[in-house]
Structures are given as structure tokens and as C-alpha cells.
View (tube, rainbow, N blue to C red):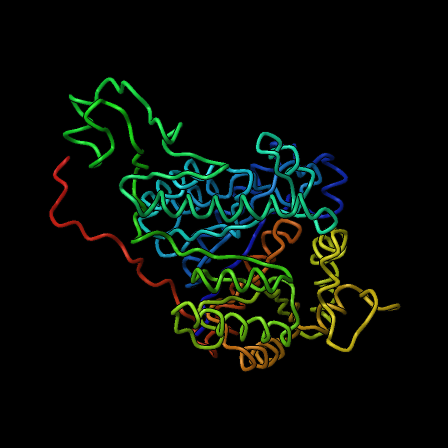
Length: 426
């Protein structure tokens, strides 16, 4: 019974619209139209029983490919229009963000959605915005060609994750490293806190202020609505190291770019590594698989639809970053797609795109889930390169015609904090 998350960046339109409204990412009318379309999609997903809706964090997309500089605001806006649907990101980019501010933002949105929030975290691979927004921390995008830069990105990613979790879990946060100190400065504390005697010592966090009125830590407020925090996802492309680390933390890795055979290897690696850290996961449990779906009268009709709406993302965006090279079979060498092979043909061949009649889609999905019964199925839906009407139609067909055969698992109630007594503040 997979939990289905629909991943929508969103994009701002197709090639014709991008040409007409250049630069479409700066078009306020287009953004407003897409925003309202997303609301219709969220409401339809809620009624159809989908588990979650997610977005990305990217900046400066003048081309209109991924216009989502703050996915948490999408979560909050769309969450106000839904009742059961969970909302999240895949995900927030940690290395160039202040971890405490992000912890606060996530906790507040979690309360406002009453526990229907999930969180994704990522390292950031796009230099255009990572290098600009990370300049004050001297951190840029992931970079296989610059080991020192890549290691700094990784170091801050791990540290900001650790601080964010501590901020959620500890009533009094105290932390020291070469990058971050709480309080600042850590050794001296913050002296002469004016309301130390009147408010902080009697009513603040125990140990927050000492007898001399010096702050010895901070209390990050509020705590998340969910206990101990929203579920945390880790989308990844081709890195076994990321899978191993996610397994040690109990995070939920999402296999973004992999044929099912490689995805199975990742699932086995995750299961075995998690077991060494005390987690008892079945194969595929606490993991997700990203796929795309195209439901039409035949495989030919589905292929034509994918050529219209999937090429923008996969050929001209991900292909430009080299991500298509992950879609190889074990015995293949050299670049893909192969000579004479289109991008959609390659992605269909490796199983990332699943298209055809209702029965075709059922059988192909059945085969993949029989290989690994992933707990989460993430559907890359290319709205608004795909028109709103077509997106709504595809969502309805998948929910009503395909998923009943597999057991469509609706959102589960969040695990929330149980107060000992009513707060009594109203």
C-alpha cells in the first residue's frame, strides 16, 4: 500500500509560453495563474485521497523551470485549502540556510497545518543560485570537480541538519563548532540580559540565564506540532553515501534517478545500514521511488503526451546537468540516450516514465513494486508545462483507475504532542 506523493515544482509553462512571456519566471500574471492552478490541484488531490504534495527549493529561474524560492510558503498556502493532504518539500537546501531560522519556520508551518507537514532536505546542486546565496557562508553547490568546495557543502549540510534537529528537540539549545555557536560567544555567553530576574529566570527555560544575568543558551520556539518533529525525507540522485547516512539517521530517502534494478540495490543498502543503527525496516520500508505516469488510450498516445510535456524537464533541464547518465543498465557504457533514442524512450525503457492504457500502467507499476515494495511513491508531475486540465485528468485517472489495485493509502493522522492539561491561554 504505497503512500503517493505528487511532486510539482511548479514550472511556469511550456516552450510556447516561455517564449511569449520571456522571462516567464518574472511574469506576475503567469505566476498568479499557476498559483491558483496549484490550489485546484491540491484540492483535487485532497478529495481523491493522495498522501502528499511536495515542491522544491530553487531560485533565479528566469526560464520558469522551477519557480519555488520558498516551498514552505507553497505548503502553507495550499495547506489552507485542504483537510487531509500532507504538504512538504523535497526539499529545503540546508548548506546556505540558517538552521535555527529554518527550524522556527518549519515548526510554525507544522502548527498552522496541524501536523500535516513533512520536510525534505537537500545539499543543492545548482551553482547559479547556490554560489550567490551561499557567499556569506563561503559555500556553493555540490561540485564533483572541486573536492574542497564539495566537502564544505557537505560539512555545512550535516551540521545544519544537526542544529535544526537539536533546536526542535531541546528546550535549551547550547552548541559549539567552528561554524556556529549558541549562545554567541559560546564561552562567555550573552551578559547583562535585562529581563533576567523579572522574566527569563522564573519563566524561561531552566538554565537559560545564570545567576549573573548571563544567557547560557537559547530556547527555539515553538516546538513542532508533531512529536518529535515532522517526518524528514532525503531525495538523492546517485550517491550511495547519501543512502548510508540517511539510514543511520532514520531519514526517508527518495530514489530520484534510478532504474528499478539500481533502486533495489539502494533499498538493500539502506535496509542493511539502518539495521546497524538499530532500525528494523523491511525492504522498501521508509524509502521512496520517483516515477512519472502518463495514462492514455495506448502506449503510442502516452508516448506522444510524454514527448509534449516531459521533455522540458528531462532532456533540457536534468539532461543539461548530466542526470540522465544515471539511467543506464548495468551492462551499458557511454552516454545515454543512445544514438537514435529519444529521451522519453530511454526513460520509458528504464522504467522512470510509465505510460500507456490503465492496464499498461498497472502492469508496469506492479512489476516495479514487486521488485521493491517502496513505502512511498513520488510522482513527478510536470505542471504547468502540462496544462491544468490535463494534470487534473491524470491525477483522477491514477487515483480512481490505477491505485485501487495496489491499495491507495490515504494520509495517516500525525503523531502530535499530548499536553498534560489544556493550555488555558484563551
